[in-house]
Image 1 (cartoon, rainbow, N blue to C red):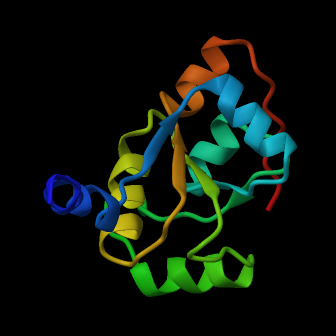
Image 2: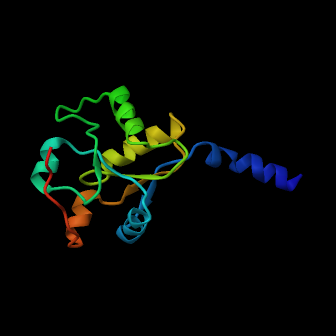
Image 3: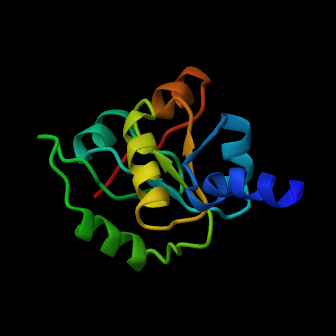
Length: 135
């Protein structure tokens, strides 16, 4: 009976996954193991700072703050991103990826959504390389 009560108490944590913060070392290991990296910043941001090598660029929030969920999900699908497989989201500071990641996990059922803690700002602060963005 005690096990059943414990299971019931913790069930919501298993049902409602949340985006998981990862540090740079974990990020690099996941990337090296083929986990897709999705950079959701704006095209202007990609041009200004560059992008992480082998990341896929899919703008989510537009410069005016608007977004198109259907368009974003369609692009994710075209990249082969599956609800049951891991992928990592990247933005400037990790605020947008936290919002988007929680939405994907909690509302749409994506099971393994990660985001780079501190985003590109943290990546650059650790002297990590960025490559120029070309359309």
